Image 1 (cartoon, rainbow, N blue to C red):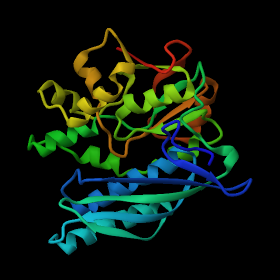
Image 2 (image 1 turned 30 degrees about the horizontal axis):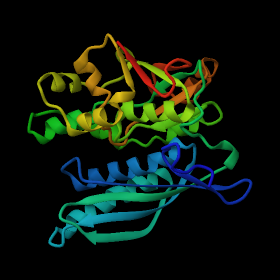
Image 3 (image 1 turned 180 degrees about the vertical axis):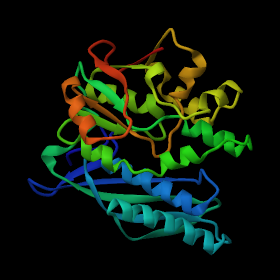
Image 4 (image 1 turned 30 degrees about the vertical axis):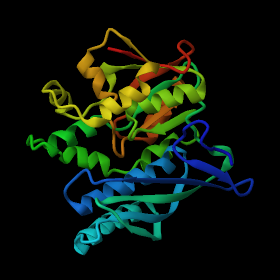
Length: 300
């Protein structure tokens, strides 16, 4: 076992030979959008992302499905079709799975990928002086919560973000990054706290530099707070230092994300090379410091 549970990384890695290791992960969650096909795509992209975060190449997957006994079979079929299409885009073969009766729908994938044991990217190798870039905006949980409450929010940009694979960013960072993680349920704060602890460094991020989905901040200001924010505040708040920040704005970085982007950590002198390989937006949102080891500092 090359990567296990001790650093709370995105996936486990098991060595087979000197040149081949398996990257293994699983993720299951309840629907966050109404359309079953779209939910299937998002669930697949979310599950596969853990392999991308490790620098691996996803190859095989199994469906994991909780479905009501009196549920509509067509809905199940559409959900699986969405996942199948997204997996095919990633080059992943879904070779079966398991379905169990559940009061509510739950779906995800168990995914296996390949990686060279000498090229594993973990959350435990960030180095002092590195910069941190983020490949997708945050605020998905807040956008979805407003949609659930019938606030007439346009969720199309959030759906596009969630259903976009992290494949291009994963390929671009290989050979350049010191450390990486994908941003999912623990939010930007939770995953960066885990990185700080695993790497034994401090991490500092600037709220003004973090890309956010349009409308997410206004939703928070209106008093709508999605459950992931309080959950992540309770879990990680004691390891966060706030330095003169807007409280409402700082809440958003605690929000739960689904199929979020990659937080990629690399030396400043590697940044231009990365940008030549990765053509999409990936702003610098912070840096790695020697101060406040195991902690995340948030500035305005």
